[in-house]
Length: 275
Image (cartoon, rainbow, N blue to C red; front, side, top):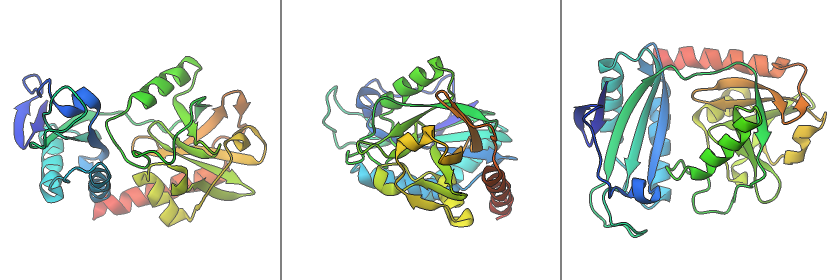
């Protein structure tokens, strides 16, 4: 497999970064995971736009999106990734072993992986640790991922494939790598950006095309019959029905609204990949 490191095409077995890279030392970096269908990266420009927003929020100079787009497509082709993903990792570059940045050149890494998608009904667990909707990283897709790793590991011990966070106000926020949608009174809803969630690319496409309401939803409602259906969305989960939240089971997963949304998203995929 080949990878790009700072624009240079390298064998993945030979590629390396410095032990002083600030993403390694402190998690000081941003990333995007782009789904690949039939060799074509899906919604690539949306991902690059979000990467730029994350970099701006992190006070990092954003990378050149046009160059990244060329390299992402080139790498997917060179590695013959028909269905899988491309990950772009952008770091603050080399610094010392503390929190301060050196102000030197940033670093860009692009890698690919085959497979990895899952759309079958799944169980999730509600985390005992809240998201801070007022935190400096709220709504940004950064490499500071230890909180997600720990919480997801905790959820997997309990039979879940994803962990769901509420925020400090007790409102539904997001998953470790996904967004959540619920159906209440037949209406599709998803946590608003005020909750501190990340604006997922798949989430935004569903909001735009299906017309889901962006609102604040008490997390406790997940355990009640008020929530008739629920599903996760992400680049690799697409529209994934939730069949259980901890000990609460959804007998109709996937429900009718979830099915309609999945059908609409399948149409979006076809349209976007034809562009």
